[in-house]
Image 1 (cartoon, rainbow, N blue to C red):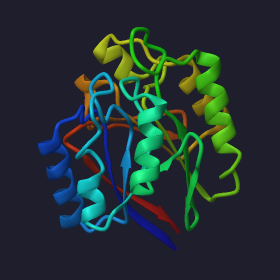
Image 2 (tube, rainbow, N blue to C red; image 1 turned 180 degrees about the horizontal axis):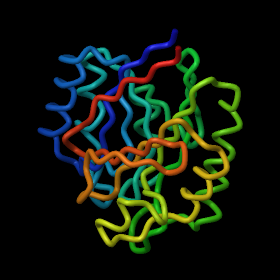
Image 3 (cartoon, helix red, strand yellow; image 1 turned 180 degrees about the vertical axis):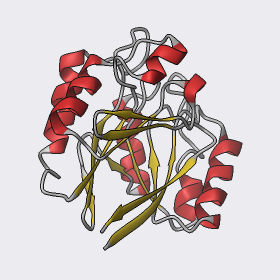
Length: 207
């Protein structure tokens, strides 16, 4: 049986104290690794102190960038901390495959993707972990038509929704919607979690 415990968080927005507190949380709950769902910076300001605290605690980080994080910043994080950007480097942890896409469809931010680009990036990432028994999709953006969208009145992504419906991941982790942090909903068979700077412990089982 595969059993994983992860700490999922998002939207830290260059808050070093939040990153430090999350790293302490990861250590306290002895998580296997940390999943960051984007917006580590605020309009691509310095990413210093956003990933280092987790690495100092001996925790591997896998992540996607947010709409506030440029791909150049994401590449820097990947190289400096050996963190795995799921949009380009999907991650297998035993029987669990993590895949996804960063950015969002919002204009006026460092990373803006079209809905087709979001879906295509997710698709490319998915096919590298398609044989995993449990599949976890990580995006920054929330899904169009989701409860998160309705509560926040904040447009979700058509590309994310299309990917959930096509690939049917067991779990979907996203940030972006601050108003619904730590809310869980069902989209078809997929358990979708909104995460934020408070962090959420998620346990994944494969019996």
